[in-house]
Length: 254
Picture 1 (cartoon, rainbow, N blue to C red):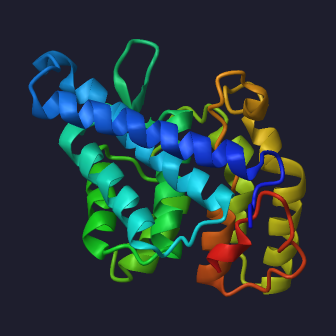
Picture 2 (cartoon, helix red, strand yellow):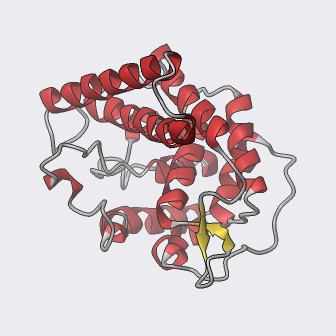
Picture 3 (tube, rainbow, N blue to C red):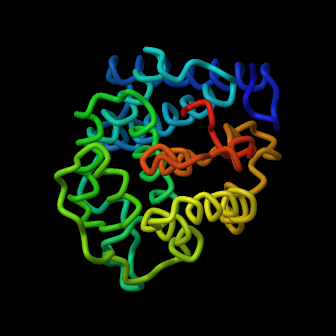
């Protein structure tokens, strides 16, 4: 049964077929040496993004998210990140073009989503450790990242402050999630998470390419799922009954 309420089964099946076809063509070109060396990292980075989109499309379609295929897509995405990663390549630049110890908006969403999926899916720890290696190598300190990481690595040292020097709307948009993970009253946490999903999650995309992506004529929409909310719910053992049927909440991962 299709989980997404915006698009239908045929749409997501075609998206997945298209993306796998693109991946297979690129893999063949790399194997046959048809990609110029200076472009190989760009191609692999794009391939990593394609694998991530397939994972979200699979959830939207209604696939079993513990299947070998989904886990393989996740691991392939991380392996390609590992092959292309150089310190601070994904970091935001200051006004004088120096890398800051914080990610761009899209990279923040990407890492928080991948860490959340690592909490929700039976991902081998070695792949989560690769994500941690990137974050530490980029010298990014973020309370939400650390909350998700410590679920997999309980012995990880707790950070005392974030590394942001310019917020560029991350904490303005997602600061509520950081309030929730520090909330000791579960009823308050549940109420805040419900409100976040209903009034803030989709609205946080305003001013970015993600807003109204389902209307894009090139069919690049894969879902607006807030995997972060599901991961927080799982770690904090919250009762999600008040927001379980929210259209952005991936309830079947719990």
